[in-house]
Length: 402
Image (tube, rainbow, N blue to C red; front, side, top):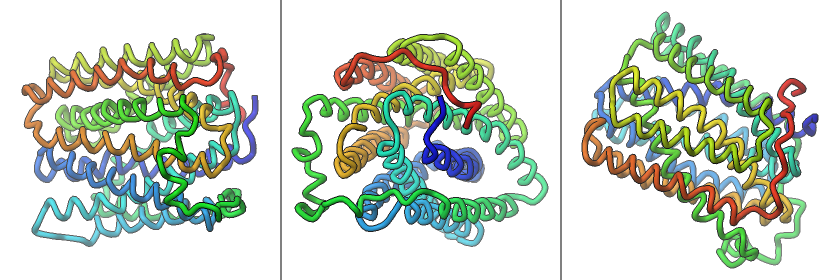
């Protein structure tokens, strides 16, 4: 099954953006880690990233009342450019202030990007197209995940971090150019004059349909364990080695495991709920392995959680977007703002808790593992309540046709 033209163009933007996001996710975090080897430093960076992510996502939804997604993708690129310029030229004695300032434009970049992409997906797709899109998007992510770290590691080795920051500015320019080719999707043609933006965002206006209220606990739970896995997968890798080429090769291993997961996803005709349950078991198993923090076990833990996240992202996102896709665009926008802010809220809560983690074996760390596993197992119940129609068996994804 082919994807709509709008989705194919979004996938092109994803490819450009993923290059930058993957670089930031690995090497900007590593850049911060190398200067102090403190878990709190990396958590502080990500805390400001997600705070500004939520704010810029909300601002992006308001901007879409007047302009199209082209503006938001353009602003996302400009924010990314600002972050790399700050990394290149900003030097402060106050380290925590410096980390905060770097994290803010990165969060703004991601927030505008997520807002524009999510509205485009929810208003342009229907039914099984959501699963196909997220599977194709995940595939692009895996391919760039394999190539970008290796190339970036070599660039850093040859030219230092400053050379890699300059290279990323070239890809930011590519994002700006790609934004000009996207469809002019917006909310400006809709009749929103009866209510201002604040009114449309009120709880009673957004969650008029009872089943949609289950988005709230589902997103809150997801934010907690997604942030726990995302941060510690990085920190475990950094604790094993700081050699950038080896980090890139480990990332290639994790990506290869996701590609194998994609192969199984396309071959095995399981229902979405079964894939979600498989994702949860893999993630929970990976979290438990973290209790024995030796290099081989930590690598195995990262492999398991990477595969689990592939299945989780493909099914969880598809189910949620399908649940809101039949609503008018203005309500979809409000629902997406609530969704993103809820996820960012509990991401930030988890990051605040991680600030108190001193090592990978303390009481606080073990308690956070328990919290992550507990919230993880609550997801299927919330998703079942959210579903509007009986699930469809997954169809073969259209990755080869993109």
